[in-house]
Image (tube, rainbow, N blue to C red; front, side, top):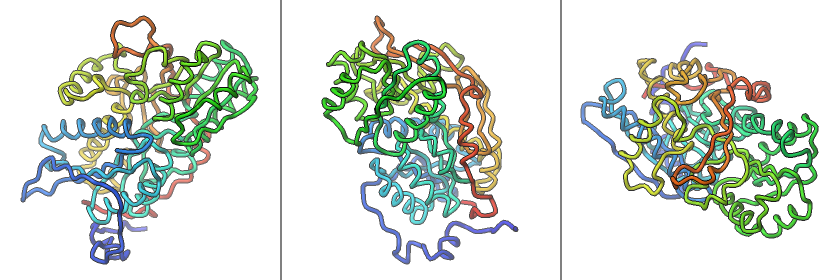
Amino acid sequence: MAELKLTRRSMLKKTGLATAAGTVTFMGPWYYNRVYAAASDKPILIGLTSDASGQYANSGASDRRGMLMAIAEFNERGGVLGRMVETIHIDTETTPATGSRAAERLITRNECAFLIGAVSSGVANAISQVAQKYGTIYLNTNSSSPTESGKNCHRVKFVWDGNGKNFAQAAVKNAISSYGTKWMLMTNDYVWGHNTSAATRQLVEQFGGEIIDEILVPQGTRDFSSMLLKVQQAAPQVVAAAVGGDDQKAMRQQVSQLGLGEKMAWINNQQDWPDVYGLPIENLFGVFGTTWYWKLDLPGVAEFVQRYQAAYPDTRMRVPGNVFYNGYMATKELLSAVERAGSTNNHKVIRELEGLKVSAHDRMQHHDAYMNPATHQMQQTVYLATANQGTEDQDDLFRILSQSDPEEIRDAGADAACMMESLDDTPTFEM
């Protein structure tokens, strides 16, 4: 099948979705961040689809800071292919319906060449469905449901975080050996929580453990007293929590107040830095996963932290965490792929991203990383950590316990579940 040579504007006219038709609506705040513009140079426009409100507002802000620092570094060097990079941000509100409307607006009204950003997997899935319809490359920077690179994969979507199965594979077997076989699950009641807990359950049973109960945690929960009473009465040896954002902050505070963090082992599937930064160290109980830490003794890490602090001297979060790192790395690799392709043509950039390989040195991780062409998930090092008890540095909260090679924790189930659209079935354009 021959490639269709369409501009975004002509494509929208052909599909009846040009903004002049008045068919695209959006509700909610949005912000246009003009980095640079010159009359003779059309900028490359990127839509930022991260949360500024809702359960993941703090992580959304950190995600955006990472994207913007990467963009600023390219613009300081003269842009990409001689063009400056500009951004428009729309708050996706941790709500899939808002994410879908935001994606429609950024693509059809603002004519963004690319979309970047997500923390909630439900929001990421909604955005990616819209992006696939138009052929717009979408980087899911920070949501980690196994379904994002599995059954909900798309040709235009690239997933940059480890997923719940990756983190579970790094933690479960050792936790059963170290702490016991009697497990309980605490699960955020939405797609990421359900799929992460399902992956944990499968591994616990595979390695001879038993799930004695599962507690569903509605999004927006602030009072965990009845749930923690259940935990106390059941007395599991291990509690595996897939609870994120502001819900996790509330849970950690109340677990600590009741002393439950010391009475049983806690495994938190993934610990996002914005969710614990500023909490007392006693609230950081248990073992948890992450993709990166600012104190890793690796080349480039100290300089990266310095660049962050120079870019954001007034930010409450004095050091970068995994969410910032994912946003930065995804954006950097997208713009680098455009440079290698010599074009913003979406099909050419997709091919570049599908073949992406990044050295451990350039990733500031322990192992080389690569984009899985079958699922479009970045295969990378996963770390397990715990609280850095006794630290005198209030920003040095984690003590890294282990690091896993990408092949050791690869999600083979995602490879089998992903039924990705072909390039021929993906609209093509150049902005």
